[in-house]
Image 1 (cartoon, helix red, strand yellow):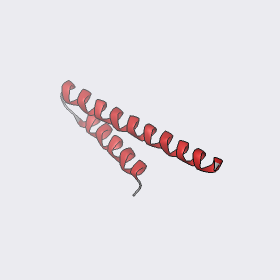
Image 2: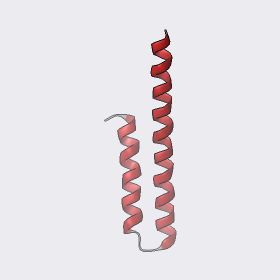
Image 3: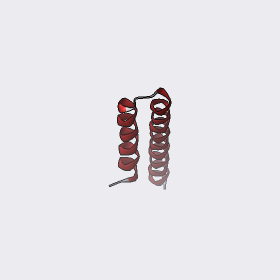
Length: 58
């Protein structure tokens, strides 16, 4: 499994936990964790696209 797939899976896992959380504090925490993993995923994909673009210039 690629790193991007792992990050996406973790974001989805935390979103699912947020949907099932009964108290607002836990729901907010899980949503924040999901957002964190989505941000890491975007950063990872941006970094990979930059590396591929840089490689193509050589």
